[in-house]
Image (cartoon, rainbow, N blue to C red; front, side, top):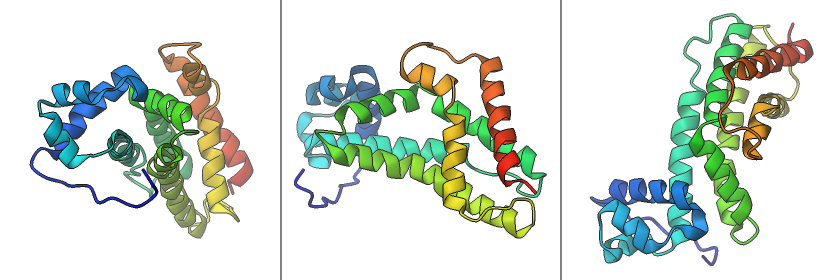
Length: 205
């Protein structure tokens, strides 16, 4: 990539190519995911794959962007914002925790960190599609909660970043560094409730 935006072709087999790439990237990592493997998993020819994505990095970015957006969107959908603020935050934190500890999030996070020095666009796109999307959704909710007098926040963007950071205590860090393979439900609950209570101790009314 030379920094020039390239428009991605979205034809009949686009979803098929992205789905195959997702499987291979998660199994083999970025470096181990060859074009041959991706084409075979997707059930398309190499020529077809290249017609959609002439660069493997571009394909990885698209996989990460689509999956992060889809999962983060589901994780941060506030179903009933009229509930008490603590209930909404507990529900949101629970969804966030399941996303952060999912095999996809863990694997993509490691790949992006490993490759970001060589290919900074990977990390940048992951940030925009994952953490930044979470911050946007949380900030929007906080703005409304402040208007209702449920929270007292001067900088909603910073508050959203702090809430996200609280969610990454203990379980997330241990999974990233392979200290544990599977999150313990009790440990997850402690992180969730601790994050919400700490946040409300600072910003609650």
